[in-house]
Amino acid sequence: MVTAPPAVDTARTTIQPALRAAVEHLPAGLQRLVGYHFGWLDRDGNPHDGGVGKALRPTLALLGARAAGSAERAAVPAAVAVELVHNSSLLHDDLIDGDRTRHHRPTVWAEFGVPAAILAGDALLNLAYHVVGAEPAGSYGASRWLSEATNRMLAGQAADVSFEHRLDVTVEECLQMAEDKTAALLSGAAAIGSAYVSGPEEVTHALAAYGRHLGVAFQLVDDVLGIWGAAESTGKPVLADLRVRKKSLPVVYALRAGEPASTELAELYAATDLAETDLQRCADLVAAAGGRDWAEQQAAAALARALGAVRDVPLAAGTREELDQVAAYVTARNR
Image 1 (cartoon, rainbow, N blue to C red):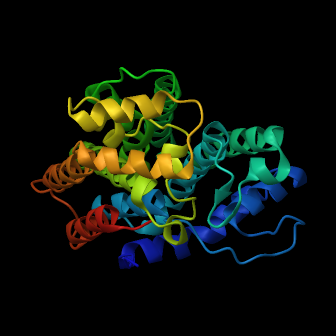
Image 2: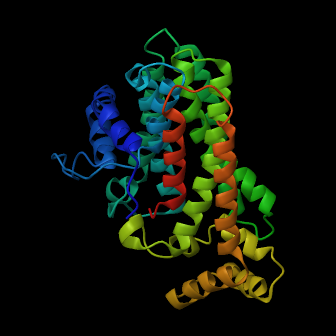
Image 3: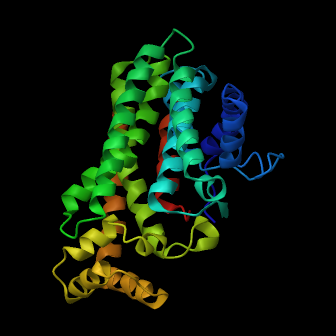
């Protein structure tokens, strides 16, 4: 198990009261669904200690505020907002991908039905803008960053869905999808804390670039885990991405590599039904065609770009080192 850096643990603790308070603004029925999704409630609405998520996005928001010279707590609403947007996307992604488990228990749609998951996701997205706009100071600039990030995230999700019906997806298209679906919100999260406290534009934009490159690295690592990650660590079934024929980055690279393994992989990906042994064969073929090695190398390169983005800008003392620690955590994680 990779240990989270102190900044992540601090963010989890810092935003939890505000996150729970924000959810209390929802109608009771939606509170129950959202509480279940966050792990606060069991399926019957009773208190439940389900642990916490990675809290990566609120970590970046709080660090962004501190990097700009303000106290972390000044940007708690911005941090809560990006966490709400992220969880809105998770609720919908689980439904789109057909994932029946998250964090080792049934997803909202699997437990409560499709309409419930759609409405809960919509409620969190709307709540995010209510939270970030509640305080006049800094809210306009922060809302713009959040809106742009959300729009790009939705564009990436749409591209990801469209890839399901294509075998001719290029590596360039897949990288653009990753920049939109995953990196845009991480970029927005890194920038929004600085924007919320009216930090210097130079710092805000450098943080945005850091988050964008970190987001690409995050997606590459996520795609590797989606094929080769252990179920006990990821909380999802083994070979989950292959089971739904996801055009993840390692898969697309392998399909386009022109290797003998690429041809066999394409044939299996075009099949209607695959047995477990076929799924394992797909994983082996992706690796044989170079998909795993390429993804890991690209993740390392994106990590270097993320660190370089904040190397030469004036940040508050200690925050550059913490951003480095968060970046290293993202690329070394196992879930």
